Image 1: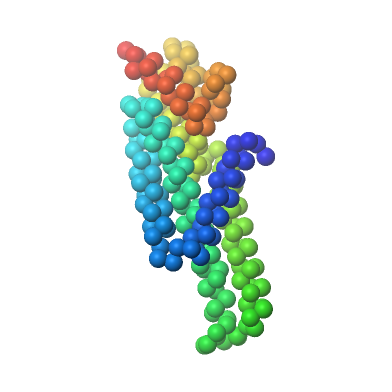
Image 2: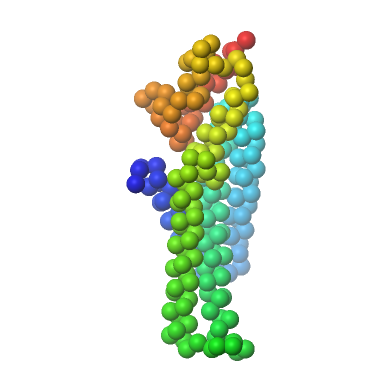
Length: 201
């Protein structure tokens, strides 16, 4: 496991714990609604950042990476609903009106099994997406695709005419401080590219 994937896994783990905590400690949905607001706000900012990237590069880069908080909120909310579903489902087989009532110990076992299955599914879903270079969820991949898309139609930027600018945009590693597409590397990349891009005739 690489360092960057370890950070992604840590975010998934903490967000999942938050979602489980909310299921038991937020019966009035107050905190969950706050997380929903965070999710929607950062989703809008991510969209603005993607579509205005070449014009306001450093600010748009920040907008895209604020999506980290939105992704955290999304995972927490998904986990909360997953827990609610896993605890509700065994009730279909137990209690009044159930076609096949289950003893309490079997109901507990079924609930534990369903909780584990849903938690594993959600964790695998988000973690597998984090490893996808074309992911539409994780900020680094979103920024990389938006960054490239913002310059592909500009005929002034080519490997022959503007090699330094071209490789600063498209290379995985630019220098010792700009390697990959994580937050700090992407901000440095944006500050490196932006003044040169603005000075193009």
